[in-house]
Length: 293
Length: 285
Image (cartoon, rainbow over all chains, first blue to last red; front, side, top):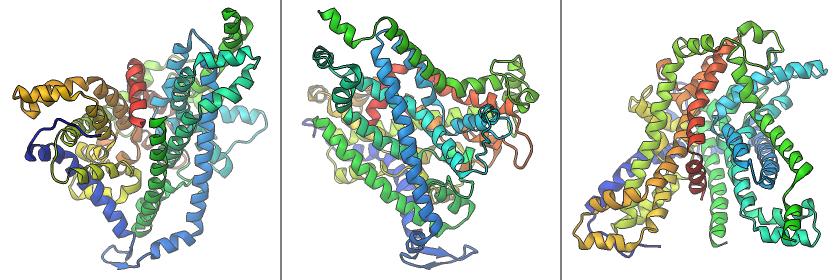
């Protein structure tokens, strides 16, 4: 779509667009280019020179046991976060949708966690499950379950998943609730006249009508669990125990800043870039469809 | 008849109560971590380290929050709150300003390379800061911007979401308005200030809410570039309050800090709920 009425001149628009172009160039394109460039080199241990290795860093990464494990960890993590944040959100939205009065109050209460930063959410959940002072871990102890996410990789994964999914429930709730409110009452009432009970109506009418929202949220939540959960993992487990919660973004950080392995870290950035690209394409394809919908 | 159908679709009586009960249980579960943090911020350290800690607030509210705000662990929390505020507002305002300007240029002018710039900006949508941390860190260090507000803010405003949003909106502004402005001999900038900016008010406000929270909740970036505790933001600084090694953390102060860290974004979200939801829907489209 283009404007019919336009202003003339090129100096003014060039000045107007300059700040964004400048900031993008300096803080985006140059670093992104550097990431790609550095991914082709291995710096010597003193950082004085570096040796061109072509795709060597990538070959090494893809055959590296730890990197492949990190891929699997990321997959498990993002699937679990997506499910744990979408299912309760859908459930709450369905209930809230049945209430004519009061849903505003519940909505206000449910929005809260969205405003809580992932890192702060990490601290809150760490506090509840802390092996020494945690309330939940203490009560689990009285039930005979010895909770220790510091040593047990499965429990560590469970904790970072729940802490990451928690704030997202609010987000998903808002979208599901809006979508449910948009389902035409007449359709539901027609089904009710035909004798369809609530759950039958839900599975056969409501859920299919929600599918655009559901698909959209699936993509958005996967992107979230890939890139925005760093704070949760850093505060709760720092990627441990034995790398069992080291997702890809965490590994870029720990190899690049803690391990100082710039070549590998850059190659990982490039691989992530490809992943983001694919996710973005999926998202845009879908958004296009939704616009014509 | 209508009433009976209504009864089938919306719950009444016992069913209605049950629905409320489900909802309240859901809200309580979701809310529990925040409640527990609040309780922990009002009791003494010995009450916490001897589990189970109480589930109702104690009487140390003033003591713990005063201690957190004015002495903290490494640095007073008041300082970190101030840094977070500057960063969040800087990111929100910076992003809105540069995007309004560039979207105006792209929509209302035809200049050489316009589409190249458009696609350049489009590309920045794709790469979150987490992915390019090492080289971005080097750039910022090269400019001597470590431990500065500029270093905290600039790399995070290099993104295109806001530009796209404004572009979409500007395209819906009727051509007649620009036509009239041109006939009256108004300059493009005058048209921008008197027509375009006032019309974008709601979009700007909605975007501000979203960007404020985005900026406030940043973690990784401040963690990398603020080595001086005086420049820590509250969201990243809280992790620095945990002692290394086996010492016991000062839980009441840490939990008071976590409550303080969530108050500003929560206030923004709750008080501007409608704008917030609109911003959320707009910026994801």
